[in-house]
Image (cartoon, rainbow, N blue to C red; front, top):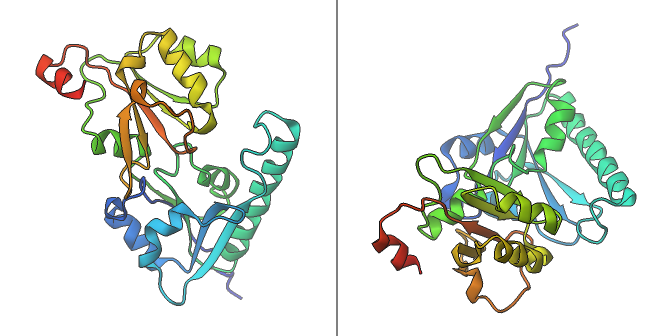
Length: 253
């Protein structure tokens, strides 16, 4: 008796929001998939699904993976770590059931699957058990600096990517030691991000981007933003390239 063929796991980068930033390879993977899994907050629609939904086949099996918690509990609290670890383990087994049945499962990931993506938690649990492919996607940060026309680094510039969930001390320390920065996971962390930028003399160069590459997107100098409320997926960009032509610097001011 022949063994049942294992299915294939595909981590699919959907890009930052604009459906036209999907890669041809991502579209091909969606056409081949028997199952599409997507993460979302319980009670909310999946942003990644909204980006790629037009490419779903009518006979496709959908597998929503709904977070039990997001920002309700501090990420360093033992209750959060326990619940989220159990969630990823349970989600991996749900995907594994389809893979063991010989189905191809595409797991959607906003931006790039291996860059702060939830897909990574499935990848480390399943890639050694099943044939796996990861399809890169346009990251949120590159989508945002392209949408705003902001040259981010040049020459020997050092770029640092920081999660806004870090402590204010760590944000300040790391911002002080870099030429350019991308601060992700903004949300309710915006006030301390602003203070860290001001303490390091980088506030005047900081650009706030909300819903980058999507309809209704907003970008402005952070120093000009009066409101300290921001969605979790907003980004703050601090450009390097201090030697760029003055005309370009003045145009951005």
